[in-house]
Length: 268
Image 1: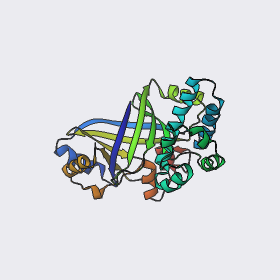
Image 2: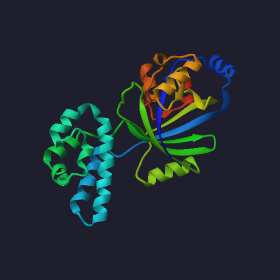
Image 3: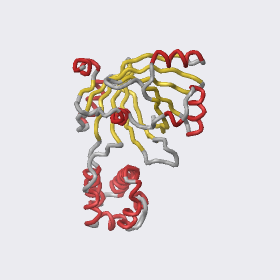
Image 4: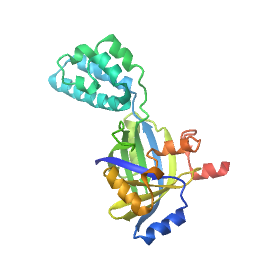
């Protein structure tokens, strides 16, 4: 399943007060869950580029060449979203404002084999705006690839997510380990979900930071109208990931490989 998320968060809420408030205007409780999450980094951008370049240069068959070219298209799409603010540099380097524009050009191989292109790609290691997440919510387990896209014409963070359901968290981790991944971090959180006027409201509690809620919308207008129903304005929100919320409070989600309620409470 693939979808585009446009979501905002309202930080530092009193959970019980907020729950009573939204229930009074008709919000229906969906579920209360404990969630267990593993995150994995994708292979480095540079490493993937080198591998694709080798495949393109071998030219063993049309099928292999077209497959490698499609891999490069996806990699350049990812990189264009990561360095969206460096279009002038990209244009000077390859003649186009986006790397993805190279893909269907006749001189593709000539350009990407240039020493300056290879040197340029060496700077890109792990993409902190794209990662794999395994999540268990009650008996439901999913593997998702999360990708933060370049800013659009709003101040709202745009997230692309591709998700599949698997039978167990052990199976999910086994599949990823078989593919050569090793989990980066394990995290826990509590989530209370409501539904109101076709929108979902998720109240999230993570170890060591105040509770917040988040809502999604199909566009900025949709979010503004729904926030108004809840008694908030867009200016009251932040549009960011959970690890960025920790940074707002002067903390890091990744100080340790394990982020659990038990471990955090034992240090308090």
